[in-house]
Image 1 (cartoon, one colour):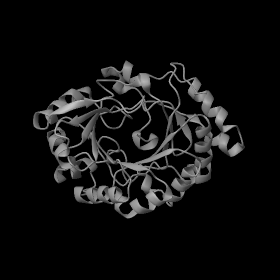
Image 2 (cartoon, helix red, strand yellow):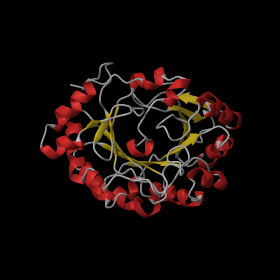
Image 3 (cartoon, helix red, strand yellow):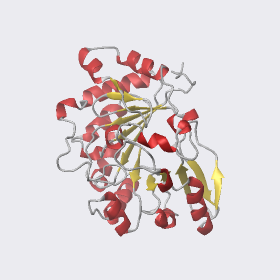
Image 4 (spheres, rainbow, N blue to C red):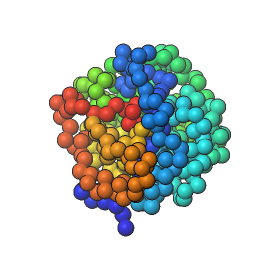
Length: 331
């Protein structure tokens, strides 16, 4: 029997952050003026071990989880990360995915595939090199991310998705270029409305480019038609090119909230469970893991108490409410 929350939403997806560290300083996620040299990341003894993460994944599998996404920070910064993938892959029939900035992907793709990873999503906000270097704020070039994408594709980590956060006045002028870059490749670009995750990115509603505007820009160059969702809870609204060149998606948490079908639970790198991307605090699972408590029962109770629907309630004022940072919680 499915584990349901207070709104009748089943528990199906688990997102596991394996580190709060990242080698980028994207201005909408880890702005350098906050996450500078003095920023204190989680000490190693506070991170969940691979054995503890495996224990959580196994308990979650017993509760109905069938998809696990590894996130960060940048997950590939976690030492021996492919070993964790192999541990979780051995649990059962779970779709294993990874969200990465792509910077280390070219060197790891084959190893990840061999460990049991199914596919990857790569964060790439623009294919204009100047714009991308500005957004990652560490002067990292587009070409090296594209190399990672090609390596992942060659290793069979497909269908590969490319995620682009669109912010007005920053990279919205490169939306069509992104679409053009990945047409005929089999890769799916998903354009994400700029989100008010955390409190350090200076989010303002007037910097959000609505999904409808993004689609109109693309459709003016490459006509589109909608596709039905592949499953309940799919976050992206899907569209295919009428000429058969592939598909794109939009994730419209701001203008088209999808809280009603959200089936995702999040685990932070230090072992806290979050029932919403916009939560300000999580429930401590690490202590339970280290004292021999019933992990499955705890996860089930957290989910059954869940009533979150932040995006449906969002207003301009919510931008000032306390929330966990994206780099800590994972996307």
